[in-house]
Amino acid sequence: MLYPAKTLNCNGQIVDLSSPKIMGILNVTPDSFYDGGKYPGQLALKRVEEMLVEGADIIDIGGMSSRPGAAIVSYEEERSRVIPIIQSRKSAFPNAIISVDTIRGGIAKEAFESGAGIINDISAGRLDDAMMEIIPHVKMPYVLMHMQGTPETMQEAPNYQSVVQEVLEFLIQQLGQLRQLNATDVIIDPGFGFGKTVEHNFELLKQLHVFKILECPILVGLSRKSMINRSLGIKPEDALNGTTALHMLALQNGADILRVHDVKEAKEVCKLYEIYSNIKVDD
Image 1 (cartoon, rainbow, N blue to C red):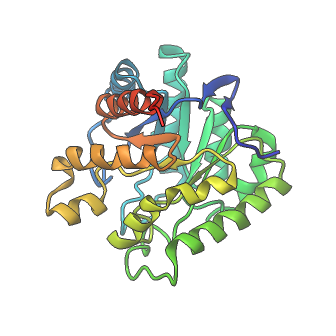
Image 2 (spheres, helix red, strand yellow):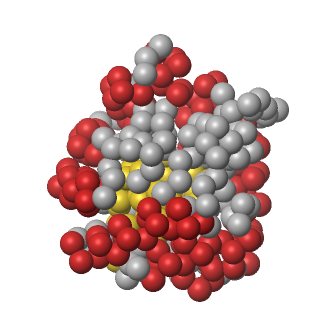
């Protein structure tokens, strides 16, 4: 059953969504758009520790770049990057909640067996039939994201009559399929930067509250993305300030989880947002 969840059961660990949560990004890839190649080997576990200390509630581990133009790597290559880190984290940081960023059902299943608690699938199950097959069995939250095209093609010519309406209709359709599979918890992600122009992204952000009708937690991934860089004429390395500004707008418009590269700064945004939200003003 899908419902407006206040908690998520992540492979036996509970995430309380009564306040905004931070999902820290760990890309163990050589070619991700911002942090590709930064965390090989033991540096990945060190980065997990850093993000946990800074206040990350979830660590999202991905072994395949989804930047525009990126090709899909082989199953074995992705597996070799992701699964050993999840297994190592289990002994080093047993209480850390891990999300696996993958389009492959087999890797999601093995990640679950290794202790991961969330599936983050940018493809909404459309690039690997095995993903939908494993969902009834692993019983962990599933991030359902909208993407027009594939990472390799998505930014060639994004086109919508109404981006908000079309993304919403897509998510409604996919949620129906997940209900039939008895998915336990579903988190929705409008897919900022995935087959959208800068204008499309800002329209989705401005109307993010519309997606509340789906009665699912909303995850937002805005961190250092091109909607910031192109708007300001900067590089991803210089986009922290712009990211912080958009994070506050996302929270005001209904985001429950922020997926971020910079955990400390995003955590501060959440704290300030909560203080602001809890101030009572006399009519």
